[in-house]
Image (cartoon, rainbow, N blue to C red; front, side):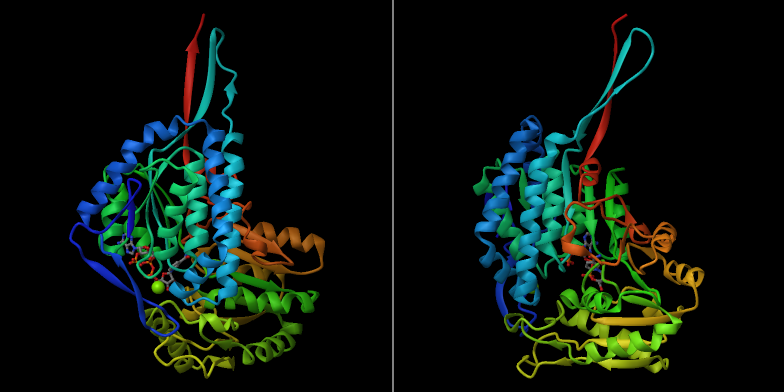
Length: 474
Ligand code: NAP
Ligand code: MG
């Protein structure tokens, strides 16, 4: 069921979509397939709720979010199991996603009343000040890879600032979003503040992003869909935040602490089956240690096993057959172009053949202009590139149209600073990568990776606008 104006709601048409578990391809649930008229109802509910919610003191809105964080924690096992079943991710990852969601609601529960305006020195006889005001109705279009986490970062920041929400999760992964909206009601959020509509992106998502009653749109997903959503929002000249994925490099210099780096390099591309916007999908290795690092990574890749979510192996199934086929086609293209496969993982024998599994692949000496070097694969596929020196590393790191995250592995402190400044990415980790969910850390892209910033305090600015008030008191 959708959640509209505080109540469960089917689609007006009565149409539904079957929901399959990626681990075995079997249908286990269904969701309403919303169309324009359903979106109208949800946006109208959010509009009606807006003025009253924006007038709730910031600390009270914070308390509602804090209560929601406790409820998410109290229901952690149920939510983790549901997320795993819906997306195919190992239960361990489902639990990590719940823990991050708890932190987002907790963080924004405490943050909304700490955003202050300014007083501005102005003309004699005047006082000028600024207020941070909510946009109004925020539309959140959420992808399928980390629904619990991405919903939490969107909803936490939007609600903390006094916006109301209409969320459209991906049709492949809507179930935990519906559950969180129910928990938000239980936490005490008034009806109409947190609405969820479900259905196909091209229909429900498109109707929502172009709706005249929506004041701001936030989206995480592919650049192509991001363009479509920006065009739809532009018809009403609405603001947008776009997080559009990456082709993120990790740069390994010869002096790196390899024992520390190796497990992180593997995990950064294997986590969630590589279906992660910040996946470290390119590893650039300084020539003197290239063979050694490539060999050690190959050894680890060979041991990786994909299997059903309950088996909690290195990775689960990919989200759907289309995504599995897309990853397989990119790997096949690279192979037929002669790019060398250094290692392959395996699919567990207990994995049903009806599931959407793909065994991890490690490519060596990848030409920097190859498709797998330039395009987001969103699967468990890692590409290795040798480099000659610092200048070469920076050039290679910046040689894609994306700029989301980067990792730098070196013990040379001056080099850490130089390279971190010159790599074009919204987040740069030094001797680490994507540590601990990073709820507090501003996140977003340069170039095709998008614009606007989520997470941390910065998201509160994206989810509000400055109003300047000038008093002439003589
Ligand atoms: P997508 O099209 O970008 O889907 C993301 C979200 O947008 C989903 O909720 C989707 O709904 C919705 N959507 C789709 N078309 C829409 C439209 N015209 N208007 C409004 N909303 C729309 O991604 P995908 O097709 O599922 O996956 C393709 C590729 O996108 C992946 O291989 C990956 O490279 C990239 N991707 C990136 C991220 C990320 O975190 N950066 C996340 C997901 C995918 P439905 O799913 O219900 O159609
Ligand atoms: Mg699903």
